[in-house]
Image (tube, rainbow, N blue to C red; front, side):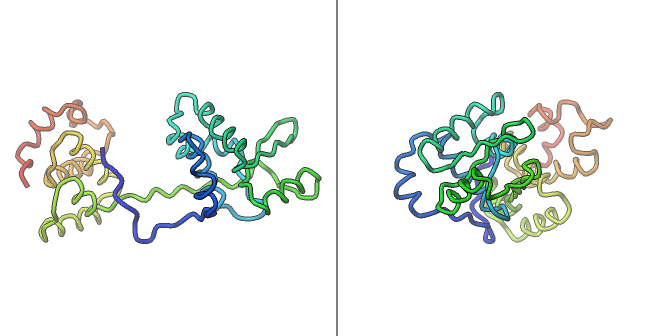
Length: 235
């Protein structure tokens, strides 16, 4: 498994009130509640307009959140667990609305401004707009660059290898490069030449496209990998 490679130089940040760390975080003993709470902070910070809220429908369809909750089979169960605890604790506010015969749940951070907004919505003084058009959270998948992948999974860079990596980064999609490193690591074949041959093969034959000429077991059989690419296993 390829681990986290550190925060990039231009990473964006999500502000969280200091009181969360001093008063709230020490009391949270459920990782699901913590994940849901932090995710809501992240989602709301990226939204625009007033009031800022996130609906249950947005959260249940958020693949980043659901994957983190390990709720692929029954995503609503851990999400409900986290939301219930966060609302009970008072970190998050929940407002239930009825629209065209359908129930909607709106979640806010429990700030002074959002408490006033919730009261205004309840009193009909503030319109939340069409909930179907609620702005989703943009997901930025920042991938580790090829040099970080090499140093983490193979070893120290040399000038010659660095030049080859630069060319590969220009030639192949970032997702291909990361997948090729992962394949090599999973097979414990930590060789840049081997990885580069994977990329060359994908470029020539297609990546996971099942075109004629590809060995059907090449993706899953380590012995088949070795047989076909053993001449490239030394850097």
